[in-house]
Length: 98
Image 1 (cartoon, rainbow, N blue to C red):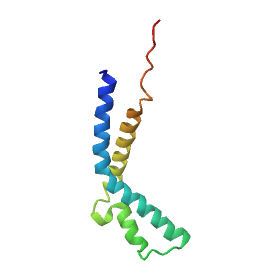
Image 2: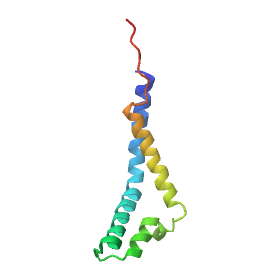
Image 3: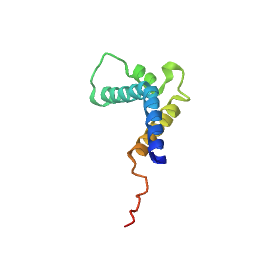
Image 4: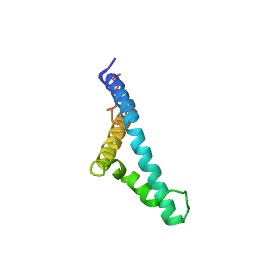
């Protein structure tokens, strides 16, 4: 097997592990962000206060407000890098000699 096949397998493993770790924080951030906007802009009431949603969204409820956005950002970047690498779009095309 070539170097790129081994590299792609390694990135697939890292991507799977990282996705398992970062799933919960990203889904919490996404859902609370959407719900906060919906409550504020569309005046829909979910029975949850906007301040509670914002404290979950920013990580304040877990006392992680200083690093929560950084961890979410790093996790997202890691998923993007490993995902794009697995697609092979940056691999050089091999020229076939006749």
